[in-house]
Length: 246
Image 1: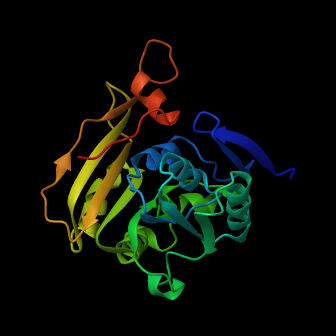
Image 2: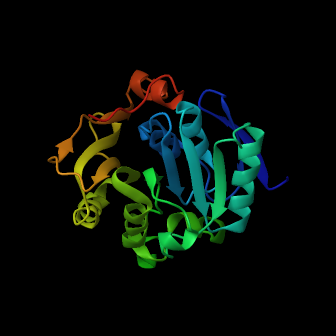
């Protein structure tokens, strides 16, 4: 297709067809996949799977788990289904139409063992200057971060894990939205450089978990020696290492 590109993720193990314009899977999707710690036999749902970049990378990393992606955009959903077939994962990965603004119960699916998401980064149109129409759905959460976290909380069973990546400056909002129904929260900051503040956070919570909050060591993506990534980040992006939780 003229409006898509073919890219390789996870050191070439994942073939991904994705839009030339609009949302394209990048480091955030790769880090989310690395943070998905589903064990053998686990069922995992991704809210807003797009063309499937994070979900497929997570499935390659976790060959004993099963994945379901939910996507509201028909074009992205079609690409996700195409990518599942291209990567030979149709036996344990599927993509379904769905919208986080609607109740999870409406999907007719049993609760999952784990849920993951890379929610749109903005829910206030005045906070983002002029996104292109192709990018708007990926950048603007029409129903707010509350709808995304509410969906994730409903999607998992008691004791199930919720993992998401988002802007570091929304951490307080994320913790507040998780707090009524989830605990055992772990937060891993993601810094562009070691001497700069974190721009992203990876957050993992357990539904009905009771353990205290843990702030984990930061992941630093780049250093100043000219290399594209730090050795730790390079290993994670290539699928040679995971992002573990305690």
